[in-house]
Length: 506
Image 1 (cartoon, rainbow, N blue to C red):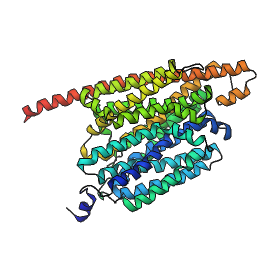
Image 2: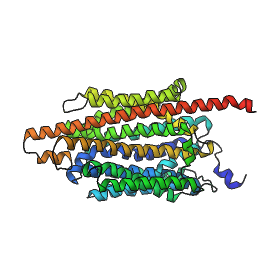
Image 3: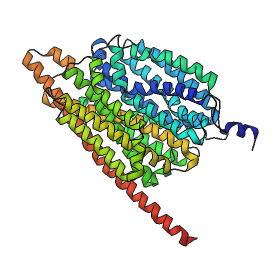
Image 4: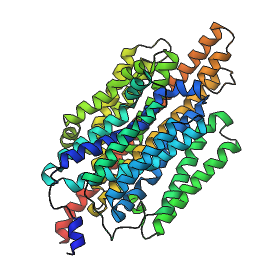
């Protein structure tokens, strides 16, 4: 073993490991909060920047799509060039992007700044887990990863509450500017505390693969977002849809032939892998799309202030964090097995979406129906996420564990963007079908209304669109859960059959 290799290998627990964990979890929390924190600022952005519904969707999706396109490549680059270096670069880019977003005075500037934040977020997301794996030994690593995962869940689901608190006292730009002191603090701590590690013989970054995947996913989601506005058969929709399909197809072909793929396409021959990634996408699809819809329902339809809306959505985050801290999710996986746990978790998510739609929707819906839905969704996410993460990691070779972590992060980002795009498109289509308005957002439609009765009709139509969107999400999550569980069950049977034949072959 060479000196450089020995230095890169983990030789035990780092003496300041828990302090380092706290620092990188804080950075991770900030990045993940920005997936959903923007949702409570929708009314402010609509009135102050004159943002349309499509603009809002792009403000949200620009961040998640750039991350999802770069996560795998960023992980490979961190392994080769140094995890500490890329973690520091990610913090710097994220801080600069947050500054640009907070000072933006147009929707175009804000969308561009969010994309820049996504680049920094991708570097952060891939390197924080790698650092955890490096500084903790086997006896404490499981506990450290559990805490890391809990912070990740809190960040994703707690955005509306944090955003509501900030918007209750400041203007919308502060939801981005508050990231800057956190990024600076984390950057100083990383440079001072985190040890460097890398694998000089690691895979080269797949830059073309990252470019093709980002173009393909962005074009597909663009087609979904603009479909209700231009018509699904229009050239404005068909051209980006074709570009998206061609881009993703070219990505798949390139990954099959390049010697250093960011995603080994042969993984898709494994039914466990396919089932796990399908389920993971749909769980985040349901949660991301639901948060996008719920914040608008609470503020636009029911008239709550941002902080009030955030507080009413807090049970989702509290349920996820509570169940993760108690370890209930992993315990259920061990007791029931992966396929039944996936069915249970995704059924709970679907039931939560249904409860929100039927019991908590409309202009006169009860908050108790929404509360029940949020708790059910939180329980489903806490139960199913550990099961599917374990299935992903166990379905690929151990030496590709870094790729597995990148895939898991990519699925979360892409699922969130897809949920916002698809369920937002359903909302827009339903709203346009019920009322004949030319306005591009609900506040604009209400302002253009000529009477109180017309305003009520517009509000009812928007609420109906929200209900329909939640039901579409529930159906997709439930059906996807059944398919994912079936694939996982079949893969388990195949593995058992091969294991039973092994002694005979020997």
